[in-house]
Image (cartoon, rainbow, N blue to C red; front, top):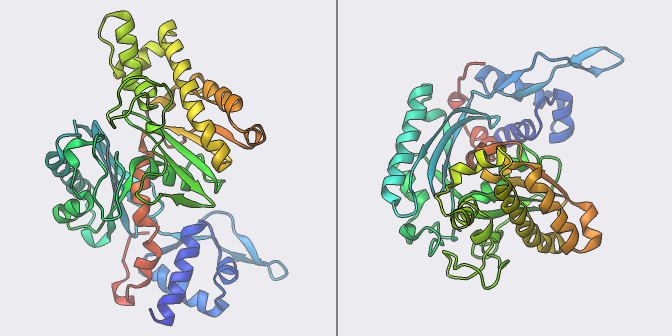
Amino acid sequence: MNLREEGRLRVLQALYDSAGTSRPDLVRVTGLSRATVSSLVADMIAAGLVCEDNGPAEPENRSMGRPAQPLSLNRSAAYAVGADIGHTHVRVALCDLHGTPVWDQVEVKEVDRAPRETLDLAADLIERALRDCSIPRGRVLGLGVDIASPIRSDGALGAEGIMPGWVGIHPGAELERRTGLAAQLINDANAGAVAEHRYGAGRNTDDMIYVRLSAGIGAGIVTAGRLLLGTGGLAGEIGHLLVAPPGPVCRCGNRGCLETVASPVAIARLLQDSWGRTVTPDDLPRLLAGSNAGALRVLEDTGEAIGRALAGLVTLLNPQTIVIGGDLAATGERLTGPIRSAIARYALPSAVPQVTIVTGELGSSAEVRGAASLVLARAPRSLAMMSGADLIQAPT
């Protein structure tokens, strides 16, 4: 990277990290001279990478009264694709440089034993997104893929007992081959943590836990601003913590895991066994909205079990924020209340006042946006290394 590219990288990184940054701000943040910043910004505005915002300007020099116009990355200069592969769905989103989806679609799919068909579906949705939005491949920086399984360092899945049909599959490499887009792979709960940390309920803290409560249960842990992965990618697999010995047999092979008592599937099964009639996870929102006594009691017990599991993490990791996401997050205080009470009862007392439990702000899009943000995090470097002739000419 030459000096011009290095300077461009500093400016682009500063704009990526903080929207609405002015030229004087860039001089302070990047350490570049005023003349260099002005030259680089002018080049990037001409190329369509950077735009001047029309909002209120701050004086660049209050004694002179010259306005310091806010700058931001042009959101349509480049894009990233996110693909979210869960146990029962495939979701694809095309996101602009600000991480906002401009195309987002989900398809119901039984995924666990159908890797080839699932990957074909994901590739088809990606092609459809680019076609529907008329985005040329040259403007797509890459593909981020999240999946409901631990991920090993070689890109294979630790899918034994979790996604049995995917053992030995390398989803990132498979989707690269199908789409021609460079792919990065991440666990779904970790993707949700990345998104809520950057765009959502955890954006004001560097120590947080994101808990995904869906068909599978997992957590993404951010400590000191960095995602905690563990040696084999297993950090945060709280769905397989023991909470109900001896309990039902879990798909991982153990008994009494959190997932066997606290997932929507487990809640529906418990109600079905109690009532002697079919109850599915899709029935739960209706039952809870109608204040069904049995459903509310099971949800309270679920919150208690989740809180006991999280109490250990609160004691061990001392987070500032716990963000509840996934399908059960929509139940709001009916779930977070029992979680909060259990943490207060079982965690180290001095750690309890320091942690706040909230529901996520991004809803069901958290994971797919987190996957896309893996690509966007590298956008400043990707764009900085383009030559002047190659800079993207994007509409402002």
